[in-house]
Amino acid sequence: MKFLRDLKKNAIFLFMVLPGVCWFILFFYIPVLGNVVAFQDYRISGNGFFDSILNSEWVGFDNFKFLFQSSDAYIITRNTLLYNIGFILIGLIFAVAIAIIFSEMRSTKLVKVYQTTTLFPYFLSWVIISFFVYAFLSPDKGLFNNILTSIGLEPINWYNQPVYWPFILLFLGIWKGLGYNSIIYYATIMGIDPTYYEAATVDGATKWQKIRYVTLPQLAPLVTVLTILAVGNIFRADFGLFYQIPKNSGTLYNVTQVLDTYVYNGISGTGDIGMAAAAGLYQSVVGCILVVTTNLLARRIDKDSALF
Image (tube, rainbow, N blue to C red):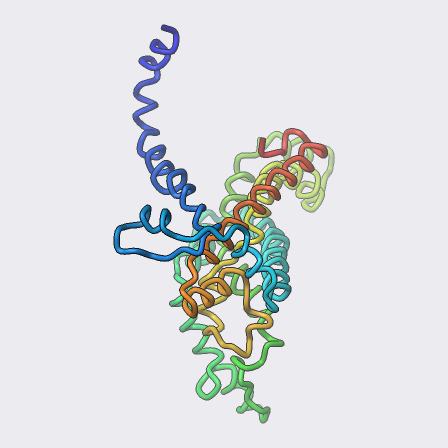
């Protein structure tokens, strides 16, 4: 009876969350059953998905073996990890710095202008950005090569020179998400109790000391939570960034090939759905383990900053 009373009491709130619950069930929980494909030599039949599963041969962990015994396994794992670590650490530093700068500005109109300017790239697709990048890096008509030739230097064939691309990809990945991430931190800074800053002013604190001893400690819980969530995706790469921007150039694979693009190229070449499912399941399991491990470490340092 108590359950029915609580249900009736909170009926309006349950109806509010019902669309979100249905969305999670349809697009997250039901598709989990499809992970069985990772352990099969999946072959599509004309009688539907479930019939294809029932009639496909079980191969156990062979799909995972194919993924990790590949000669490119070290390269794609190294690239995926290092790029994501760079995005997390460098992106965090710049996002917090930009948020603090915005919070210190006295003109709210200028803050809105700068926020809109930094947020705009977040809404652009990597396909569109790839055309802008090509306008700068085109071997014959690119802006950078025109500048180099105008000062008497030799043009660079950017799409055949791997040495430049780690910096290009890191820059673009951080640049695209910088505005969105900085707004999250800016909103948190705006929610800090102003009495903390007033007390610091009375004590004679400088601007930097206020940032160091008031702003940054207040941001620490949010930074911890967002970092934990980001670590959970450390084995996932932004497909658009690593596929569209370098134009899937084979000569750049050593520095641009990540797990997602490797799987895509493998599927487009062989049509092996089982191997793709194995890669996705591997990313999800490792991501879950990393989230739980990182959260446990955060709890040991500061219980209030942990995700759960």
